[in-house]
Structure formats: C-alpha cells, structure tokens
Image 1 (cartoon, rainbow, N blue to C red):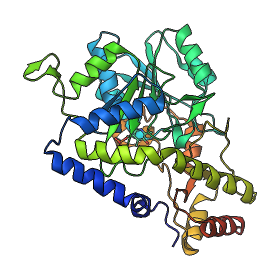
Image 2 (image 1 turned 180 degrees about the vertical axis):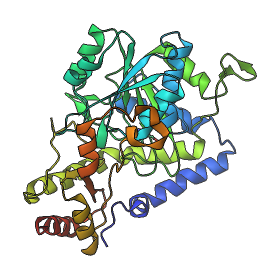
Image 3 (image 1 turned 60 degrees about the vertical axis):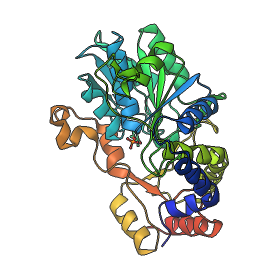
Length: 366
Ligand SMILES: *Cc1c(COP(=O)(O)O)cnc(C)c1O
C-alpha cells in the first residue's frame, strides 16, 4: 500500500536530532514557557520574515486568539462580519463564530481553490471588518490584490497559513502579507510538531502584546491578569521538536514541489482535473488535490490498486450540523469542490517508484 502520508517515516529521518532535542528539554527541568519556545518563536519569525511569532497550543487557537485580541483592542465587536472562503477547513470558521463574529462565506476560484479579490469585493458590507484568506492546500491566496482591497475598505486581514508554511509571492511569505498570520503545526502539516502546536505571526506591537497575554491566562506578569485569557501555550518539548523540523522545512518543501511537478507532468487522464498554480514559489503542496466527477469510483480504484487517497474535505462547513444557520444559502462552487476533490499521496518521503505507480494507476482509470 502506498500510504497517503507516512508520518513515522518523515520523523524517523530526524530521529537522532529529535531525540537529542527531547533529552535537552527533559534535562533542563523546565517544560513550559522557556528557552525552547523563545528560540523557536525567534527562528520561526525570522523564517517567515515577520517581526514576531507567538507560540500557542494549536492552529485553531492561533486564529481564535487573534480575533480575540482585536476585540480586546477595540478593533472588532460582536456581530462584525468576517469574509472567509466557503470551501475552507471548518477551523477557520469556528474561530470566527467562537468570537461572536459573523462568518460571511465567499465562493473560491474553482481552479486555485482560493479566494479572489473580485469575489471578496462582492461580499463587502458596512459590517465587514476582516478578510480571512485561507491558503488552502499550500497555495498562497492572491495577497497583493486582497491587501489592496483591504486597504481601500479599511479591513483587517488575518491569513490562515495552517497549510502554507513558506509559500510566497515575490519572496514575501505567507503570514507577512496581512495584519497577522495564523499557523498550525499539527503533525501532518508541512511543518509538523509531534503533537499539537500553533503560532501567530505579526509585526503589530499591540497585537503581540495582547496575544502573548491571552495565551497565558491574560497575564503579562505572574499573578497579574489584564484579560480573561486562556491557557494556550506551546510547550517546550514541542518547541524543541519544531526547532529541529524547521531546519529541514525548505528541503522538504523542495521535494514536495518536485513530486507535484512529476504529477503535473505525468498525469494525463482527461477524466481528471489537475490543480492550477498561479506562481511557482506560491505553492508548497501541503496537498495534491485533483478533481473528478467520478470521485467515488476513483478513490475505490486507487484503493484496489494499493494507493491510499483522502478527501479534503467531504462536507462543506455550511452543510455541517454545527452550522445550521448557514444551511439556507447555497454555494455551488464550494459544493462542487467538496463533491469532486481527491488528495493523492504527496510527502517528502514518497519514492520515485511510488510516484510512477500513482501516475500509472491514475492514467489507467476509466
Ligand atoms: C489544520 C488547520 C487549522 C487548525 O489547526 P489545528 O492545529 O489543527 O488546530 C486551521 N485552518 C486550516 C486551513 C487547517 O488546515
């Protein structure tokens, strides 16, 4: 079986370094909010090109705490509208509703799966306060156009970078275009911890100050609580794991790009629609997502031939039980995407032979 993603194989590449980092933390006797986190925050901010990265417990919290901080700073209030792609992973939308803000779902470009400035513009109302572009599957959204629109309408921009570590437009990375970027380091993400972790990147001093407090009970200083905060800290072990993995991220991304290129060049079955890229440095290939009206048959065919595939995602957020209030509106583009997408194996450990097998099986599908 060609696995969709072999996490064990990925982390085994760095076994010695990871174990050494782990031992360093164990021996330090300090497990929360210490030197490893501080170092990782510096290294990740420097990697992205932002002035600060604030470690939090996971990607969802990175999104939630950024909205929450904007509320504390008086930039947002209950009932404000946030524009978000209708085909995103549900976490983006959970972060909006968790803060009593209103998600306004917008159809994506069916070719790139991302928001376009044109579609966003059509949904701006006097209540719109934030645009939340999601760099889905690893491809950065058209940030130049989105930032121009945001400026025109004085909107905040929070980038959901959970799938797009290192994706860039003209050398400027995801997470540095908007007012803030929210990252996830869930194990399967391009930069993955060995557990849960996340971070917010930003240059905004006020935002840094508030999020740093919110993640730690609303406290800047022990036993002084300025906000009704939460406990959402990135612990020392995960920070140490991430410091190791960050050093290999660019090399892994390069491999991902080469695998994707082989798929793009090799897959020629007219029944399959391949992903479209806007620029070569803009896609870090978190997922390789193809579309076909015969998705169920294809997934079965792949599985019968020893190739594991997954669907990202089978149900759009507005069709989930959790969002009954969004069920009345239809989003035909997003719905078609959810009906047709299939993700095929892509990782830094897939072999040449496996890539060939996947391509041949896809091309023989009828
Ligand atoms: C993974 C993911 C998140 C949430 O990250 P967690 O670390 O799992 O909380 C948010 N948005 C998108 C687009 C994601 O893929």
